[in-house]
Length: 446
Image (cartoon, rainbow, N blue to C red; front, side):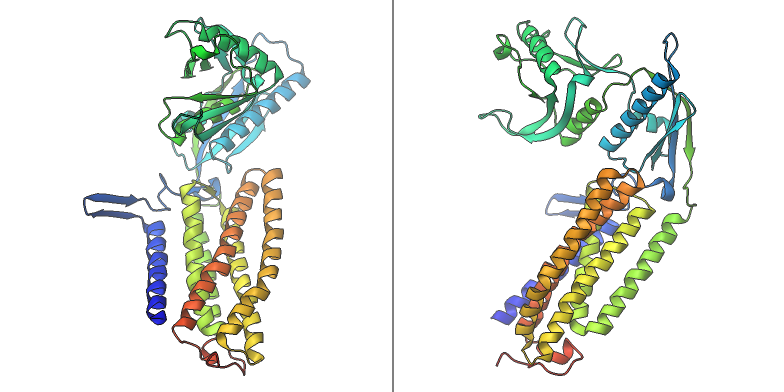
């Protein structure tokens, strides 16, 4: 009975690994029992992993500061242009384009390069307008500047004790903003239906117009944290609004004066050759593990395939930008995943050499390797976090893929590999020669 259960478990896991890997790489489109199952390929440019400027090119936008009629010294202009640069950088990061580049050009221009978007006009729409963000009442009076908002975040959950879970945006205001917002919402709440709103404006365009309930007519919303809710149907809408609010105030308006598409900085075949090199490296690792560790190596290879599928799925689902440094981060974490298995298998071999059974050696090997694996991966995660926090652009891309790969490698090495090997033991594959080339070990648990 135990052997049958192991066969079933092993079959299910192998099917999940095979189907998951196929779906991630090639997509899935099925019609079964009246239900349509559809998942785009992770390599689909519109739905999958975003690719960096170095791999697929993109669009370049040059913005120029509109300072006519303004008396700015050279120092003030330089400081303001740095603010423009930082605002654009933050806006790109909030939209998920961490691989985009933002650089100064001359005294009053900033150049933005956004990967994957080949149409410059679309790039401008994606980046959004670059005018000042304001909060206005129904009469068009500015009641709050964007500088009063410390942060905005997309959330999902209940906004009241009795309400249903929904998508909403949470605003956090500074002290000046709390006072101004309380007065504005108190005034808006006392107005008739249709005028009881605070409009969030970007230039002359309304990006959101939340109403203020009558319950705030006496005191207004007098809190550092407040909620914009209602009318949001999915997370992308709240994320977009939060990103626009977080973009902050520009010291003056800027205008796009040059739009053009750009090719891959590493050449047209950069992605193809990079993936080929990665594939060859991974294939050699799979062969080495199989030769060096036999059945254990084969199970590690299956876990490595699962690792690649999980990493690609995460990057596709969250639309993470992938550049050449990002590919390097993935390959490095592949090495760490294999290294964790090597540590475990070395411990198992040591136990077999001492004459222990396969089952006992396996449990002891995993237990004794656990702390070493955790310590090594924690130090790598610390490095990835520091790189992401202090880095920009492709450095952040490397940090993201390294961090994701490290976490997934721990899961596959400690959980998946262990599960697969346990099923081998439960199937009575307990001959030490299948697991190790060392002398010693017992075939049974006698």
